[in-house]
Length: 267
Image (tube, rainbow, N blue to C red; front, side, top):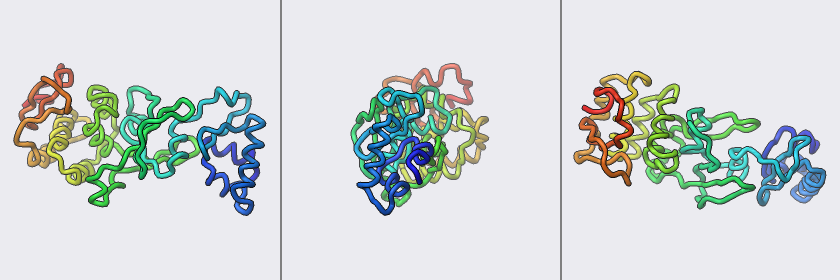
């Protein structure tokens, strides 16, 4: 493949991908020479060691900002986008973040790449222990790449586990309510693997609140009833005050129950 064709079909890529497409016989050295030449002509921007972005015609390479999801995927080919990034890729987010979060085999603290903030998280230990790290994932097409992302069911559970990574409970609940569908058997399987009463209660409250949206039956809620914690738990760990939703033994922030109908918020 010639360099121009490769750059037109690969908006962001890593060196391994370039070697495979541009110089399988010449190897890394030959590929680096071709990339260096393209960069010198303003067609390519180096983002990090071994990661590059193709610069559109007529755009200043120094000012060009590549898609943050493609950058993260090029840096970590095993990336599984999660939390607020998952909400964005699933089309449910109510805001756009500069921070991009994804699960990866190698955890990292937040770091910047060309002005983009990236954070790679370890896969949840409960899922790893049960060899279920791939449970609840799906593929999403983004520009010229297929990205792996947590699906609505996994994202719902992840959001209640880490509200700080989804914009806080208020924004998260509003976003999650916009999912087109939730596969309840898959959701219950995920909750069973995590094995946390607080998550069962949080999901129970959410499904009861939006039962019409997601076609939740009485039988579905009864499944969750059996997992309710014995002592009241806060929906958020750092929460103070709130309303006790007795059915789920869950203390929910006032702003999340204000304006809800009685059968949606408090039993």
